[in-house]
Length: 160
Image 1 (cartoon, rainbow, N blue to C red):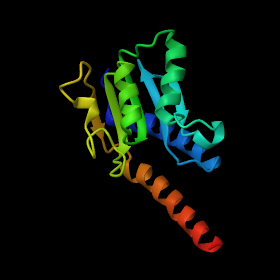
Image 2: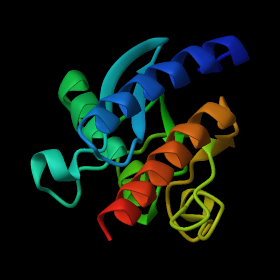
Image 3: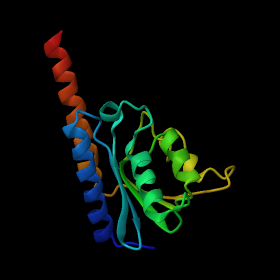
Image 4: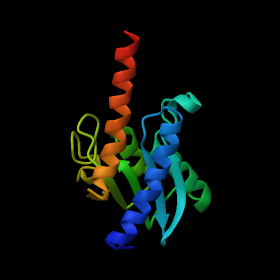
């Protein structure tokens, strides 16, 4: 399903709300929603510290929730909206879940696997390729991350 720019911004704002949940738990503020037929069927936020599990990235949580909602591991006809470009692990999970479309807000030049460092989602050597769109609410998505790391560095400096 194709979404208008206005609809994409609505869904990215929902992902930003998820990122705020991560921020409230002093997690890296990344949020994600999965949409099918204009309805959010899965939500997630980074929760590695909260759940004490290394794999609890926003995309993984949202995929798990969407799988439960759909009663299926395949998330066909869905679009995943995430505030920051997916990492290698999350890109692999997106492909394995057969999600056909990813929309992200800001690039992740240090860990990104949807065009920045790697391009797993569109790699022709893999049997499932994903349509990727970047830059929806980019400034807001990048801003929440920049603020988080700026505050984290300031805290570190005060304790030294």
